[in-house]
Image 1: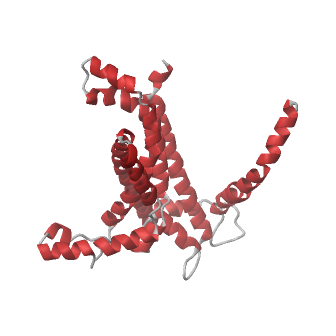
Image 2: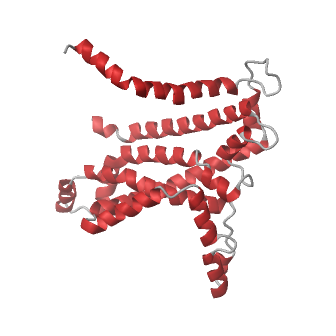
Image 3: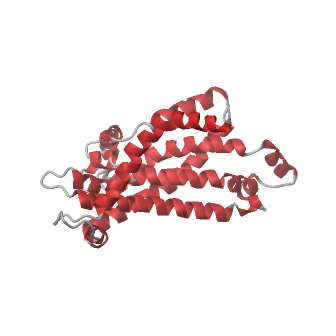
Length: 286
């Protein structure tokens, strides 16, 4: 079989996948972008920037963007730091301990959305178990905790970011060679020196790649936030959903514009991560 026949065979094998990608990813994306430039008031206007002007000038949408970015950045930072420690612990573990740890990570990484919000309501809601216990024991700081705020939302976002971050970072630790640690010890180096000078620089591509995933995961999260606070807390994904499923009126073109804004925020974050990653790993090409 010649090279041209191999290319045709590969194309035929990939054709169903390419069709699905086009129908469910590329085509909806193009239609959404085109829709974002159409007017809500006058359907005959095929190109206008009024939706984007509204997205960046109206206070409610500005607040949604700021709240989403704040929660996303905070949960990403906590997720990557705790996930790094957890991945290192998993890498250093052996036998049943490691298997149990990985099993728990796999279960908790899939525990999100409405079930997660419901679990937090039972534990930390107004009549939650921990709040009732805190009131009984006189722990004022915990007894006065309000889950139905941005702080409570951040707690839930951090919860589902940690197992995802840990699972993504565990394979990266396989790139840390035992010989490097032994050489550091023989040369009189402290374990902290090893991680600062060798370990973390080697892991930087994986760390920044994981941060990109965490950022996108948190920015687009919808079910958990809506189940806990519904429309009482302004978030970009919640606002976008309201544009398409409003009880009174729908504003699909404005919703499309907000969706494009959210995608641009993700793209900017990924580009920043990639730039920092290139700058901090130049030593690899030296």
